Image 1 (cartoon, rainbow, N blue to C red):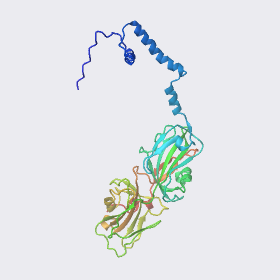
Image 2: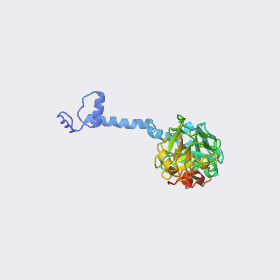
Image 3: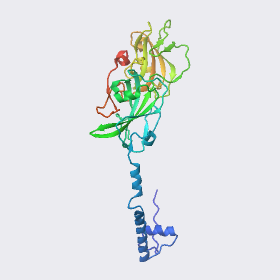
Image 4: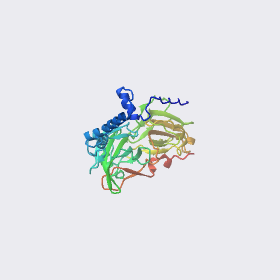
Length: 372
């Protein structure tokens, strides 16, 4: 678009009229006067507009004082609502708004934002956590990995650190905790905020419509049985939905955190399982698992329970199998199933440092997942 030409200056306009003069004149509704006396008057007026507010405020800029008040530190053990707000659903990346920088205190403060209704965590048994850490100085997300949240699948034991162990025992799945604790880095002590979501370790979806052709599945506390006696072995693979979740969908390259049980069709014996609550949830690497699992588990949402019936060629190659899978989470980091140790310091640090480790009894890729 072409610019409109500027209007030529009128011959009646004073050559030295300033913008300040134009503003003052327009406000008063007067014609712009000419001459040196008006110019001097405008200068005096502008000077008064600058000097008087400074004198009234005692030489302090009100906006600067307001900023300092906003940045005033608050003791880390203040009520949670006074210190911050945290939003987002359990299992999602939490959004934290820090109202004031936190002055560290020598203790751990625990708040339970959401009270879950699932299984209570038991020391020595499996658990699944979403962890996010935030700076107590500016509220920035400091979670290792860059995704804003870290998935952890393991046992509730000393490996996660005494602070997490003490504060998680007895907490029910579906809960969200906020822990505030001092951390020391390079000799400087600051406050760290950790948001802990305790995720379900069994599927929580809604019941699917029953399929009369599916073998009957019975889910117990520590095992799953599939009624295979007298049922003909499958000649092609099939998936049956038992519970339908609402979470993220499994992709062909996903690492899936799951409870599962792989059962031999001929004798109904369990080949491998991660169903016992004493075990950590298992891992299914979709790029290195049974052919039938890789084919049918794609697009299944987190929170679902499915039954797979697989002929020998879609399983391990040594016979037909049935497999019940609870899809619990998608591990985007690839190392959620790991040992965890607290950072070495003496101030009750709650940060979990995760290092990969194999779980031979809980991973199909270790026991029965190679493609045939």
